[in-house]
Amino acid sequence: MPKTASDQPDFPTACIVLADGTTFYGKGFGAPGRIQAELCFNTAMTGYQEIMTDPSYAGQAITFTFPHIGNTGVNLEDDETADPVARAMIVKWDPTEPSNWRSEQTLSEWLSKRGRIGVGGIDTRRLTRAIRQQGAPHVAIEYRPDGQFDMPALLEHARAFEGLEGLDLAKDVTCGQSYKWDEQRWAWPEGFTRRTGPGKRVVAIDYGAKRNILRCLASAGCEVTVLPATATAQEVLAHDPQGVFLSNGPGDPAATGAYAVPMIQTLLEKQDLPIFGICLGHQMLALALGAKTMKMSHGHHGANHPVKDYTTGKVEITSMNHGFAVDGQSLPSGVEETHVSLFDGSNCGIRMSDRPVFSVQHHPEASPGPQDSYYLFERFAESMTAA
Image (cartoon, one colour):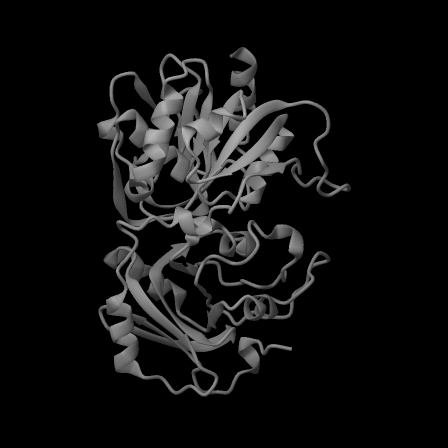
């Protein structure tokens, strides 16, 4: 059985080195090794398994601000993709033995089998302040059971990381081929159920889609066909969709947009085709409509982000995970801003004023997080009925 952080020797077995030379020592768990990444922090109190397996975290290491990570273990049902995508996780308290009826493995076992590093015993408040001050710093993280670190090499490794700007990571996390999806949202006591009967034909473009987003589409009455990120407009239209969904995903939207934007612009030529985007899909749609995107300082990552919906006047508490954002000042004529973050006023949603084409920056699928924004899936389904 893999050791937990509390089973480790008294000396540090893990090291985090920021590109400016700031160093943190802790106890390693999961899989030994060395990685380089962009460092971010996540404020969610639940859902660490879903967060680690969210493809939007490709190229990043995650500092969890909530101290009790690992206390509910892990299970096969909560993975958002086949394996963890985030490169490492950093926590304050050493993960304890899980206490939850759904637990099937300890967090350390799960990370070890999937080749991911965990670091415990870190002052995550101090590390989070460093992230806020420096703006998603580049880091090198190493877990060595013998505690023997080559510090100059680690610092060089951190400084050699090129960052996420200009990187198209969607190609790394997208599906290899098209497939059908019919699993619906988890519900007590049945668990996951399958959608049956005819539904609204939806093509979902996979830029790094989370499973629970696809479940939400199925639960909203959609018959979902998933296509790779590089799918052409002709391949999309060959399925005769009644709606097109643009998924979440990692990396620089401008880089992914090199092939995604022309495809979406072709779809926009069909006046009656509803389109709905989330996260990277939101950014892809904005670029296709003529807006611009920009790199954020430290991004938005958590399940407690207040967003105002201008279309209803309501404030929703949402899940977010993005390091790039749509520049709300760059929206062209005919495109309205529908949602904004109440933390910093950044854009969180757009729509075309005369067509059923809309998108949001936040994650309405509640995995993890509140369910305030689930209505967006129903709005998408209703737009196809109207069309």
